[in-house]
Length: 391
Image 1 (cartoon, one colour):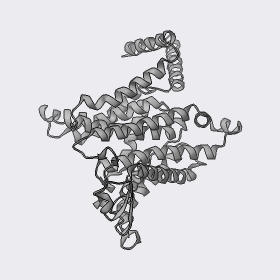
Image 2 (tube, one colour; image 1 turned 120 degrees about the vertical axis):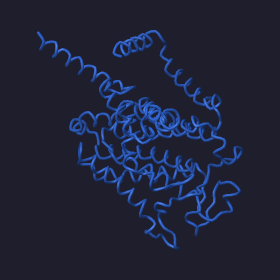
Image 3 (spheres, rainbow, N blue to C red; image 1 turned 180 degrees about the vertical axis):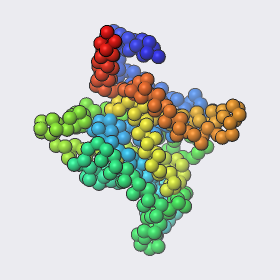
Image 4 (cartoon, helix red, strand yellow; image 1 turned 135 degrees about the vertical axis):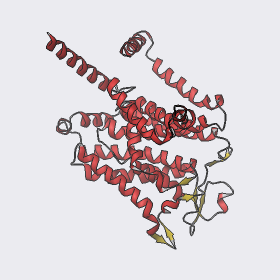
């Protein structure tokens, strides 16, 4: 394994010396084109296509959490809250849930005749982003003077609060006999995306769904790359490395941290809104604490602070969770004489995978350059100490 990694590093270093400076942009463009044409190589309604759509949505979430945890170094254990708020934004503004209202804007001819609030999906994305950005600031305010484990506890509490509100929101009346949520019954019959010239999306034709979430991923990826190289991105990294030194250099810690929470929450809300319409319902049971850990595992496995690592981690765990375990390997235990499906131990599989990555490649699969150099130096120093001790 170590020899393979060393060989890959050698190839990478050789490529950086030989290839022209524009090769990375050309490679990124080629990957985008491959992503666009990918659905034509698979069945339009296959399980693999379904898993691909969900995996891309997970990659968007992973990019959002990477802003908070990877860039700014703020451990967030309540990220599921923004998934929930994004999904409920879809339920509130893209269904007949608020049945006393009659608001229709940019929707299909069928939806325009129904009671409730029915907005075009792109407008719902904007609403979800704004709601989650405000929620991100709210969760960030109590953590401004906290560090380390205390931040994790506060964010964990926020995620649990949103989950409790989702379950018990049917007791919160907003007027006219309408409630905040539908509790465990969920908000069903949500609108599918509709665009003039394309028509109404349906689950018998998955390609438009893929292109929609792929477009969101490309947008979020572009914003992440620009943020990383911006003044704000450098301020996040400075706070992550040494907050005291960063503040002494004039970096406004309060504003910088709040921006990390708001932007990270925005991406989570956009992904949540998409998954809400793709799953055709918004149910409080979807928003459990375990999902926050699941998204955090994507970021860690991919590589903390690495944009491409977040994408790889999201896609990898998305495929494992939605295709490899349920469709390919689910019956493997029964073939070995064990009486349980593999889906019952999927979180154990994710935990094992996380441990293996931490042991074999602690910097992640696609590490950030700074973190890769730091961990390589630490490992070299430890090896030198061991060699010194054996003399």
